Length: 345
Ligand code: DAH
Image (tube, rainbow, N blue to C red; front, side, top):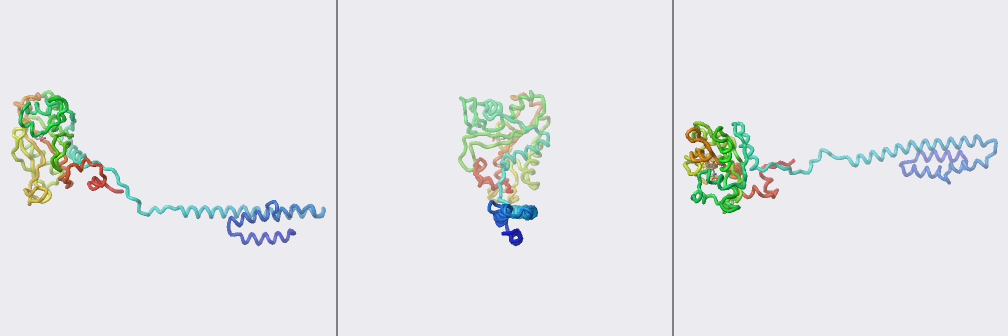
């Protein structure tokens, strides 16, 4: 083939090329070992000497114009391919995402924190005490001597002999705090913590539960101070319209002792399942600290008086969140705990 024909064919081919594959085919057709331009080049030996120079220049021109064309087209096709790929892999960020279940504080924890926060703002300290406790603190210093029938009500787990036990209440922390203050300082403390009893007869009782103990020791403390304090706590938890009522009760470590009832937040006192149709719900035990307890814990009862209270944390949470079974708090089944307060994002 002569230069003119190759040039014509090349121009046609260049016009027709549609994609990278065809472009590569053209490269083979013209520039490979047996390509048309390569052949033209090889043909130079058959050209008259006087025309060799011009022939060579023409073939080179043809070759260069094809190479330029090839480079540009290749760039163009590569870009097309890349853009198509990007478009294909585009993420639609407006699509709704799969819901992820987040962790959340246990609701018992939340109740405790709510009470802590409130009482800290009223000048109380939050303190801790051991769960493995001595009989002395759990009972004796609380005016419950060995052999006293009041011990029967607290089905205690003994660990070693008669003296080491799992605390059956958080009240021993009262004794510990009073003793550590040497009868000198006024006290305002709360102690939330785990307690243990051999008592799991029904769905509202568990062998492990949580109490929130409160103790205030100062001068001229009265029952109405106690009532005012309890009133603030229950209003914070259950709302401002909640009323508080004290019923006479009996605890060894308080005198007088009371049972704290709140008006039913569900029926406003009309009577419903939650309040067992009485209009009232019991939420705590409380009272004025017994002089024997003050004295045995180093506080002179002629100078100091105090009040104490103990809430059952699970009971508060069960009421607030409408939970029927106390064991729910200690379950790890997400389907159960999810319904309390977890958020989906
Ligand atoms: N510790 C008592 C119980 O477990 C609850 C209680 C009652 C605590 C009266 C107190 C209190 O501090 O004053 O049943």
